[in-house]
Length: 166
Image (tube, rainbow, N blue to C red; front, top):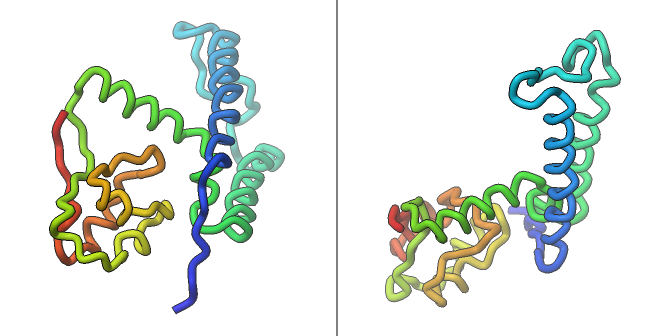
């Protein structure tokens, strides 16, 4: 089985926040320029939307696809998600707000005593997180975790499970 290159993370994870700020600001500016709620038009400033009639509209689409592929090949698995994804800050903000308001939500819980130390959870994690280290700390919080459940499914000792609480 070929070894999968995993992303290291670290300070490069902050790039997405520097992308998110101008992105959200441009959304607000274009929303206001379109007339706010009363004049909202999904295809504002596009001739026909994205269609075959205007192939130049695909430049951004193919640019993003190319960025995903290049990052995956050079930096490792899910590098785009770690370093560039401008949607991730919304998820992080949502988690922080739900914690602050004590809103019940889905999260992972662990039972350190059940862990056999096989590291299968860390190997299986699509976000390249050190899940076993989180189990040892008995703290399953990580802003990069997408709650996919791969660690829950792979753990034969049931040391990791889903939970729904405040």
